[in-house]
Structure formats: C-alpha cells, structure tokens
Image (cartoon, rainbow, N blue to C red):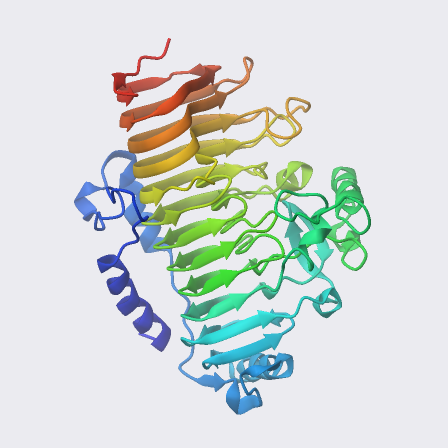
Length: 479
C-alpha cells in the first residue's frame, strides 16, 4: 500500500465515524452509517461493483517540500517553487508535493502523472488573479464546449495517478473586482454590468464555431475572450483523488473533472458564491465516487454533465457509474443536478444518505435539458435524502434556457426516489416533459414533504408511480 493509499484508508475510517450534519435539521440521512453490502439490492446491487472499479492513484513514496525549493510561506509569489516541485516530480517519476503551513501566492499549477499536491493543515494557496498568468492557452471544456482557453488554476491533462489532498485552503482569488465581472451583469455582484469586457460576445462565437464543426485547436478563446477558467480541472486523466481540501472563490466552476476514469472526491469543502460557482461537475466521467463533502455555492452543488449540443454529441461520452453519498448541500441553485450540458447522456447515478438545506437552496433534485441539448438520462436512483429548506423539491425540466427550439428531444427514464424527507418547500414538483417525448418511469416511494406552499406541476410523464408519499400531512395521489 502506498503512502497515499494508507492515508486514504485511515481518513475514510474517520470520515465514516463523523458524517456531516446541517445545523438545525434533524440528521435523518447524515447520521446513517455506510449500509452493509447486503443492503445493496435490486438496482442498488450495482453500487459495490462501481466502487470496486474505482481505483485510487498510486503515488511514489517521495516528497518534494515546497520550502526546500525556495518558498517561504510568507505571502510571496511562490510560482517558481511550485513549478520546480512539479518538474522534480516529473523527473523522478512522481511523488508528493508537500505544501507546509503558510501562505503562498501563485499562478497556475500544472500537475504531471504520478503526482500528489498535498496541502498540510494551515497551508493556504492563493491564486494571483492576473489573467495573463494563465496563458498560454490549454485545451479545456467551457460550458460543455471544447476550446483553447485560459488555463484552469490547477490543471492536469492526459495524466494518470493524480491527487490533490490535505487540510489546507485553496483560494481562487476571484471576487467582484477580479474574474467575476467577466460574467457581465449578475446577481452575485452589485457592481456588475454588461458594459465593457464580458463573456457574452465570445460565448456566442464559441457556440457558433461548435455548431460549425471548427476543429478544437482552432477555437481560440483565451486572451480577449473573457471566458473564466475553473479552479480545478483534470482533463482525460485516470485514477484521480481530490480529498480534504477547502476550495474558495473560484473564477468559474470549482472542481471540474472532464473525461476522467476512476475519480474519487472525498471530504472536500467548496465555498464559492460567485456567478457559475458550481461545486463539483464531473463531465463525461466514468466510475465516480463523491462522498463526505460540503457544498456551499453560488450555483449548483453537484452538477453531472456530458458536453453541450454538437460538441457533446461529437465526443459522445456519457457520465456513468456515479455514487454520491453522505454529502451536505447548503446554498446553491440545486443540490444534485444532472445537466444542463448533458448532450452526451448520463446513466447509473446512485445518491444516498445526503442532507441539504438553506434559504438559498433553490432545488433539491434537478434534471435540466431541452430539445437543443437533448441527452439520454436514465437509471438515476436517490434514497435516504433529508431536505430542510428548499424552493423546489424535485425538478425535471425539458424547457431549460433555450427551451423547445431544437431537434434533439431528451430521453429521460427510470428515475427512482425513495425515503426522501423534506421539511419546508415552496413547491413540491416542477416536472415538465414533452408530449412527443414524455418523461418515463418516474417512481417516488416512502417519502414525505412536511410543508409545501404548492404541489407545483407534473406534466407529460408516463409510468408515474407514487407509493406512500405525503405532502402537507395528506397522502399524495397525482391526478
């Protein structure tokens, strides 16, 4: 067992004994321990196999201490020390880059295979919000579209055995004066405006190039395009671990793995309240475990994706075999979300024993797509979910953003929800399929919503099964 895997094993034992609890909410889901293998029956019987297929990275047992490479940890620009540590790891065939307690400012960090970036307790890595530092452009996905863009702040491309671990803090450096203004007018920044340098024009041009089939290498959207980079993006990587760290103030999405296999996200905290600050967005990934995390975000908490429109269909890689368990969601546009960049499809998602609640949590479970994005979304299973305060409990929306203006009807079927308990909601449901392409086989069992201002809407669903579901103290029987 490598040093990394030994630590992972011990930390996973500790995490099992100390599951997250939302303050003021009965911890019905979070207090549950890991179910024994015997409880994985029926469709849930796939979970043990998915977990066994997820391999942790193997990191050579050698350390590269940032202090020994010239960093002081006194708030200086430590970019050169980080680059030296990565190069030392590359030359040695891998190892662990150790960031001791202290404050380090830096530009982008590009990891290489067989490398772990480990932040010790008390370590703070602050990314310098100067866009020119994140050049030259790299291959990235932005809102589900491939392009050459600003480097993600922590990035790895076509690597294996990659890890980002520790108890330290990673600050993306974004605020209402840096990075976030490129969004244009938004609800997060009082000083936001659509005048000046914003993403609007370049975003439209990128969409046109995607639809026209322009080669990715010719889609140049870095300097002058104002498309913000994610904080962490591992692209086409195998055996990835992100564990323990706290991530704040991301320019864009916080954790964005793309086309990865064997991905573990464990015990992290994402706390970023800027525009598009999704917590964790696995996109076109296979064999994924997200557990024991806290998401407190300006956008979706977890959003499972698979590429947008023509690009999603061209790459044609779904996100599949995903286990989400024992997580907390606070602020966010949605707790567990599928979409909206979902043209490549999503299948075999299992969420259990999670807790979500906030006056700023808009939706509990959410699928968002339309006839421009399409996507085949099926075999989605949710159980033992406790929701405190939320706007909408379950949302499946075929009319998201562009609405019904395309030729790619979504195919959404076999969605099962059981043992969901919600304390307070504005609406129970906002479920809208198409008459020509209805949502199929939606099952809700053994669940209750203690208070909802309204039932909301359920439209164009075939095979709706509701069993032992109560809303406002009365048995719910859909008409």
